[in-house]
Image (cartoon, rainbow, N blue to C red; front, side, top):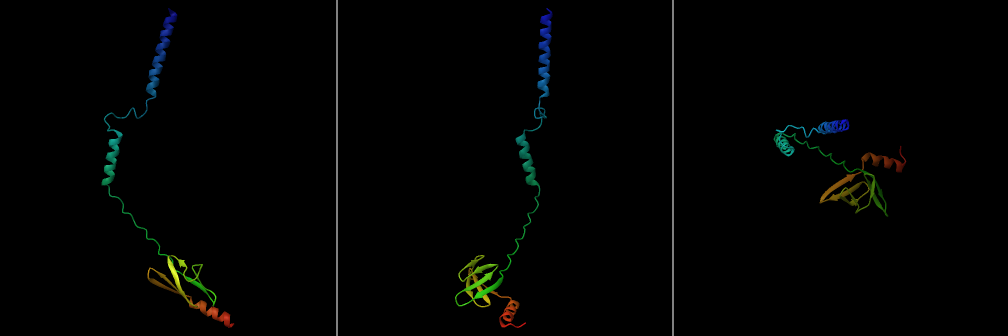
Length: 138
């Protein structure tokens, strides 16, 4: 008889621990307010509210104007004619930034892009320095 009572109490103890254990494992999602709308409805409601809110105007960042082409030097001889523009060596027919070098003289370079002509000339101060170096005048 004692054995039956002990077994009975042990079964009751295990069952009560089991029920309380399952209750303790309940997550917050299971304990939410039963009157609250389902998650998909809340999502739609938030989207509708966000659509009503005025959105900040997107400011357009001005793209910086490209640096103008700079003619640094011209190598001019009977055999070759080369212009150094933006640290690139170009001969007649070569392209830089979508422009084609079409003509080259001792102090000027002419580039064309879509019918638009761009004339680049050497810095006049460089010409004076070059003349002094060639003639040997201080």
